[in-house]
Image 1: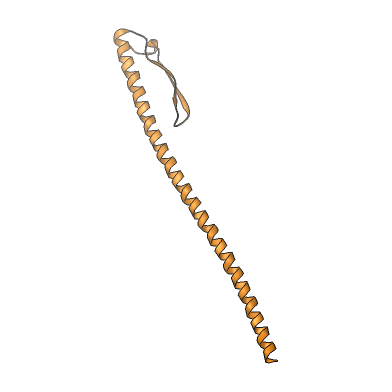
Image 2: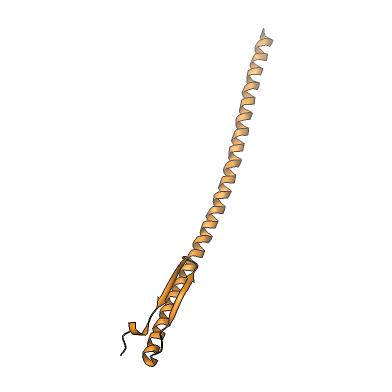
Length: 114
């Protein structure tokens, strides 16, 4: 009788131990999955940071291009007033940072001549 109780208790402990091993295995698997997810998040954060950096560089380049366009147009206007030559015409300037096209067409008759 005592031996039967002992066997029963050991079987119960063994079943409990098996259940604990299953839980540990499942938790280890979940932990591994979480580690992979953290690594992917870290890579995505790095990519986002790189994209923002590129966007800032492109915006800076766009400002430089716009300033250059304005300077060229102003220079051409001043020169035109002096020589009465046709003014600067810039068409289809493509700026990759924003994917848009600028057209600047200024005709001599549109200018105020002094």
